[in-house]
Length: 262
Length: 303
Image (cartoon, rainbow over all chains, first blue to last red; front, side):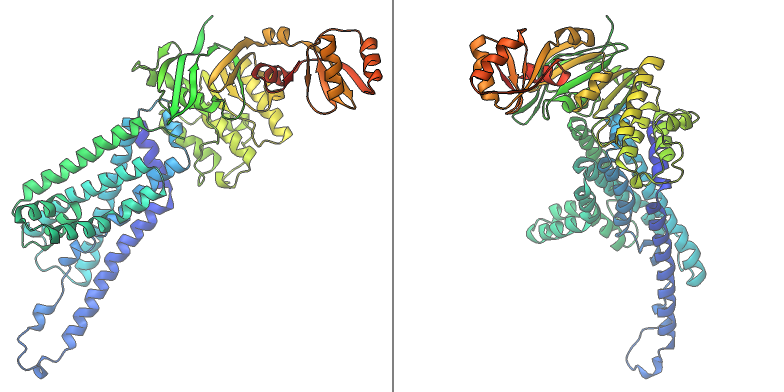
């Protein structure tokens, strides 16, 4: 397993894709900070004396870097998929997966090493965005509440969701073994959202709707981001994401073990 | 005799298609085992099963005496190197970087890589990426990949595909060296039977997923008959005459044929002359691996 990880990490860090996506993530943090800064400037130039009956204070409209910490949460799976998904799919496309199987690495270990490397990519990208917002957001906009218990807990709660989404992405790429799997994995969030929204409209049972919102990773992410403070069923939600990670991994390994490779 | 690879009634089905059908082969230690068979005969499928890329449907095989259902097989696979069909390379990496990837997967140092690159003739490719390599260079890099772990058993599927004559000679010499100097057992499949005949010490003839004959090079040499190769203006007339004489023969074209039954030349020429069939040339020759194989699988007309 250690050898497989060494091989995978070398391939990851030698490729340009990892760094390009990392630069995009840092760049987005910087651009969002600038955008908020200019919006704040625009708002501060509004002459409130001409607005009779409007009771909004300019100070209330000022945007801080706190909300920026969550700005990339829903789009992060796409970026993780571009790097980690392609890393897995390329191993199949170039048939370099053969080189590992021929020398006696078990398929379980190969799958798990792909999962570990993908989760590492997720953590690095999440950390990179967090640090970039701390630096650019902190300097350009400043924080209003951060570091607060609510923000820190919410940030931590998003990690199991990203972990589950990454595990699903690994499942799709490892099972389909082609670019189709990669495309499906990076668009998974949007496809699942469409179906789950439809499901919510059709389903009138409140309990079932609640379950759908909590069990589907992208919906759970929306739930976490929209709730005021820590969500009511936070522990249950974390367990669900861990369960999705475990189930998709076990399922993926079983399918991979049975698969005939080119 | 000690065997590196043995299969017992190995079967592999893809849907309803039986790619391997009760296939049994025995690859002796220290041999160069040539697999001879037509396209779709099951050579590559066998290699895929042996290297762990495909799971057998039924039957069993053993590598270095370890059976395929034994958990120790994964450890045993470390002693194998393989090139299956197309070489498996990282296109964005240089030759050396590609091999470093394999050392990482094996958990070994990369100090021998320069020697391996020299051995396969890729020592001076520098930073050139594998995607810019010619087909021959890729083939050689694929072989280099398989040599990184110092294998005791090398599986090569069509290793000289796409190589120029010079490349073919280099790869042939390299395979001979690996076998003779390092004692590596080699399982090799190739469509180029002439080339295989120069290398192999043992043969397995495969047809429709089944081994129809296994033999050593000496046995093949004895089995290959001496024939009289004739060039005539009409082999249909030749066939009539030979049938009348009760001779065994094989037709290759409207003008060429091999006669296997020993016979006097003069009565044959006279008999042909009577039917207006003229002999252009006549030479005695030893049956080739190719014609032996064709005779074995019934690919040509037999008298």
